[in-house]
Image (tube, rainbow, N blue to C red; front, side, top):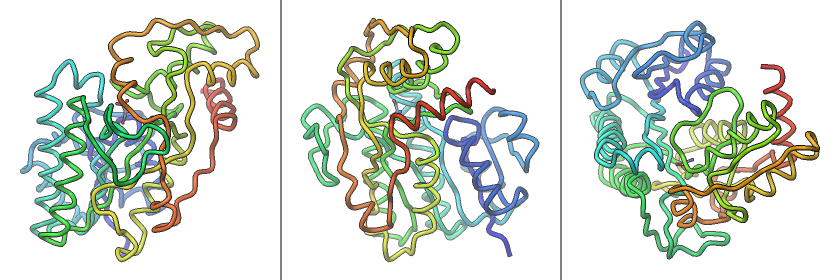
Length: 314
Ligand code: SER
């Protein structure tokens, strides 16, 4: 029998591509998309969809029972920049949705959970270069605090109740199919749209703000790989460091200029600069590599080629 999968937050930047990748792999009818709002035509028309609030335990339980769900991917969250504007809403969404799925797994109503963490779990006193898996973490954003707490709860539910929850700390994610919403790394997507539309971009982060980044195809591969790994190989039950590349806005601008020579970037940093300054500039992901065979495929040059090529066509 095919695996039955639920994606919560399926209409967001990651959820959209993850849903389509899982439908390709497991069959359209086996992958149930859900969100608080409807998504792209492709997502809505390619398989089952349920309107569902991730903070409503009863609603998730109904869907889980109805479709006999085995694996849940919880992608709903309020990101770092929006979270600073609505701290309590961010905390409530990010934590309650996680408790809902952890409790479903504790009660044996689902088998396995994927829940993403983020580079936002790190803070100003974390070693900035090649940030290790185990290190000092002092997040300064509501989003980062919720992800760090979430990591501890995942490890706790695994140790105490045997819950099979798996997680990676995503870097900033670059994609062309769906826009990100409310993050500090969103500039790295906006810049490609703006380059094609106006040949210029005003960046909300300062020149030299080097952050860890990843092309979406790599992030989706990592997500599916960790979920398919043998449980005994998942040695980190909080969340794995994950890395592909690191760059600042001026480097992405140079990379775009190799395709659009008169592209110009200017800088107008806002409140997101302080958030970016508190995060690492590069990540040591050797444990993910050793434990479940993680290996990134895209660097900045190949990401730029994919982004510009696909955005021109779409
Ligand atoms: N991309 C996220 C953000 O910027 C980090 O996980 O908030």
